[in-house]
Image 1 (cartoon, rainbow, N blue to C red):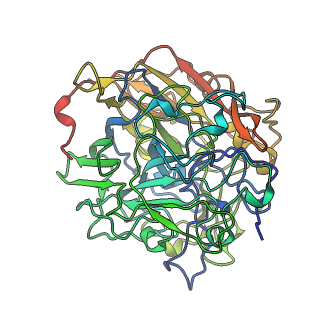
Image 2 (image 1 turned 60 degrees about the vertical axis):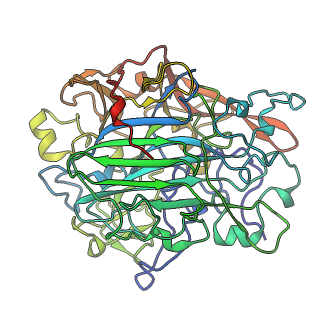
Image 3 (image 1 turned 90 degrees about the horizontal axis):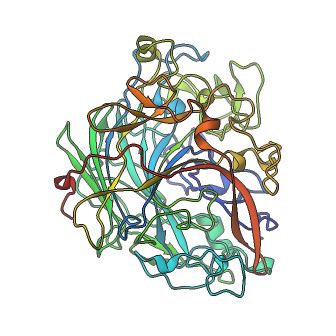
Length: 548
């Protein structure tokens, strides 16, 4: 029996968290179930949670736009990983704030073709092509959004060190960062009005859920530890002898582009000299989950994933996702709250320093499982916005730079990406425009315990209710203009874009989604602020692109 609400069919994208694990089963192979709130999953437009529960994620994002062919399927960043503060966190919430408290992951994104993914109208998708842009709200139009080719979303995710290890937690190592190529699809027909045909068959729902995830850690060999296939549950356990591990403060070049074998990610660590990579290819075990609602078994189809679009703009969307972007940098916040006692490892919190327990105190672990920092906490979505992500515990929120260094991590620093045009100018090129976007309306909705009306926009607010702070992006005055995330007091901050989240992320955005019976569903899922130019152009260094 299908166990998901079928009344809200326009789905949004954002990363998911792990299902609960017991102490006995900790570390055992298990599926990643986005319907139970895993922090690895993409945010869908409406909840895919069991009994209609919210499973989403707070993702303040920076979007990059260009009309030049090649801008939608190629990106190269210079990125510096954050360091930890000098002061360790304490169980009562005092002390320093480490990266795992602010974000279980941050990531670089891109839309990909997946002919077995939503909206399930056609089984064709021409990679690297703007023929995949479908924006019409007229069901009789050939470019009606419900006729959009099937899409997946790639999140090249970085994971902070020092807390509960994979596969249940967020860390690979006590002190080193790791990374993974993560591709989310959606097994849902957004056009049909027949409830029996909306979702995939029960065998698939019970094994990989409604949002199947291809996953592989970035490895130094470029070969996946185990197949990335969503039906392979072993791929969530890192192999530290093969995986790329990085230090806080390391300077990275991150190159993402298409190849005949599939999308490739190449990370070069300039400080250690090590390089890691992963290709979304058949040899690495990447696969589609066949959409066949009437089947009795779940079938994986070997598949090499390729970028969907040639350009990147307001119209290059993943049509089932809450966010509106193609090429983007995004943080994954709101996934940690302190907890001093649990009913079982991976279960519910039974005691915390707040004095009261909330429904979001779930997916909790004790300090006994931590790799380094001896605090217990919960990884459930912070629905009431009262955890560390929503406090002035970010870089740039201290009284001065000395206090920041003592109590807060350094910010993640990254340049605007460069891309390789497929025609005209041959060298690496800057994106022409940028946008700030956050999906706060989506996570303030009633299925998350809020009162935001995503149909009218009423009671959708920024910053979110209950928060004491919301992070923003600023530019810094380094030799090469660099983006940083945190507060307006980040060292060397040059442009703070209004200095607060309401000013930076701008007005409500009304987006169209396919609905049942070829109708259009309108949703306010984001605040978005599009700038007419790129205020932080990157320095052009053609020799930074690695050979395949």
